[in-house]
Image (tube, rainbow, N blue to C red):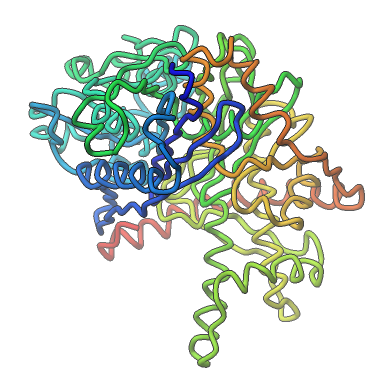
Length: 524
């Protein structure tokens, strides 16, 4: 590392936005540049993304960062990558894409998931990976391709994830990281591929598609001359392959700071709920759901439950208001409506309605897996108004968060919070009371990019280990604890019991609605 190299670039390749963020070696965010990403959905449940376009967008984001940071190329000590998890990005001869990538949103593998979930080897697969089977995952998608699109696999030489594809374009190396490797095809205890898992998925014949596993906190690969020309950076710059975006965001936001019992939730479009434990303390629930995802710390993993939709539920509710007001010729902006949420909650009664936040067309994956699960509001009467509905939706997020942590064991002793919805004081109050635990908000703006940049900082020797980096980059950015409202805690205890009872009782209703959609030729 040159004495003049004082920056690390973290790249976070999300589903809809690719961000390139420059940090100095102490963790201070210097500048950010982003490019909107695009994906396409189809009536068959497909959700796909152009691989060449994703690389072009990544390169554009890096060039855009270079326009904001003087002498970026010469000052860059390392580049780090994270990105959207799951999905299948196939490459073939000369590293060319085989087809558009299947995203984590793709629901086509649902029939294969149902078949595999009922098979004899499923429990052994779950106990190795710690991860419930769902349509998002590369294992399920490749098994579905083998049954329905075998030509794709015939032309493929490697199965990558989003960040792996960008790492290939930056370095010319086909690789994946220990987190995605182990929760998809491996064992979280050994951080390596598992024959037991491949057998359970019926993918022994596809083992050659699995790339080598690289830990970006321990080793890097140099930026190629071709990638340097495309990005405006220097050939030979070390490139670190980070872990999947969920754990990178949690790492940057404080899932592990040495405080026992701490957990981290990201409340964005989706909800991601994580607690850091040693591998021998993992709680594998009877339902076989959730994820176990390695952290770039020896023998430390995160237990994870994820909601398909979190703030998307709020967006849906606000869209109702936007559509109605547009009919009257006076449509407020989405931001204007978001600014009113805290006020609406003040004018409504806690616990009056039950809302199940399963608004995603892909159903739910945490803490249960059901592609047919759908959102509902229970308990309405003629006196309820729009603020009551908004409160129910927000409380539904609190109930879903509690549902997820309950599937991982005890409630956390403290919840670290990140994501756009964390800016709402009312939402923080609901989450604190739902879990009966203090909430602390991380002021880190780009936690995912920071998490992978931290890995690069350790890999190039700027810090002795990850704990030293966390002490400088993460812990100082945690806000003061916000205690739960003691008056709300018993209300939400009772609401949660009702929420769970209703959720269990609604499963036959979801089945009936799915049958109706199928009879009408509707897949979602």
